[in-house]
Image 1 (cartoon, rainbow, N blue to C red):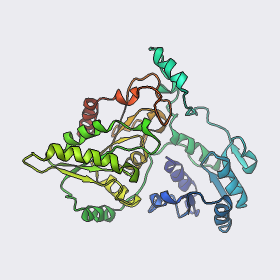
Image 2: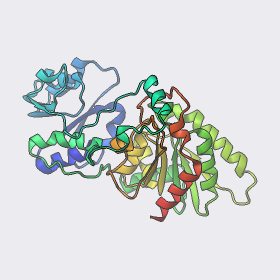
Image 3: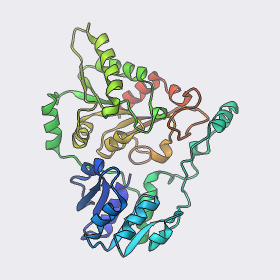
Image 4: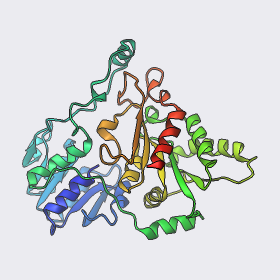
Length: 355
């Protein structure tokens, strides 16, 4: 979601050398990206002094601090970068040379307490204020775009963009012996944040059975190492049902088997991705793949995939009055996700394909 701001920064400073500091696990996202000349990465748990020393040796003129944490501002201060621009936040303002005020349209993602959730459910007519944001610029994309404004860059919105070369797609298709004539539906049933973001596995089992019966279609199952058991359950149920079919359907379980670049190439290969609100959802949209995304504890108005209002994507949520709660686990009956029926999701996938 920071890519529109970085593209606007490149537009404003076409000849600048722009370096991105990012966690090591995300480094490969930025290969071939036109907004970035160089990537510096840091490992999980790497010390503050180690990170700041990597920056200090580069003699940067200016640091744009995208995260809101005190540590992010302290890193660039310790690196002795003369200009340091970021949002004004407690415990870090004196590390910045230019404090940017919070946007007027900013909506905070506040976690609800279990008591508040139960009260909202009891008051049947109560709706979350965040269900109907007061501004069309509530999305997180605008948070990053607002930061480049003080540097003279445009804050007009752009779609998030990532880049995968065609030869990368061809390589992964060859490695896993994927038929390029097949239309691939991606299924991403996990969510690292917690179970409150995950549509029930039994519903994904229904979806893969449904999609595999479509002539000319196949299913790619995605997930990290933590999603291997869930993906295995979906795959096993699929083959239990498909064993008796006259035509052998196509399903490839990729959970825990791909690097980040390979995942990106597979997502670009998909005709459509069905997913929870999670990282691969954003990556797929930034690569141009249409997305059907399911939202429970989080808000599509704030962190939906791609450009807000993009008709290529379908963002589904229930009418649960307690959503979004922004919790990792549901303290009641998981009505936000259980309220999204498989029939509704099938219709959304078919409608997206027709578009």
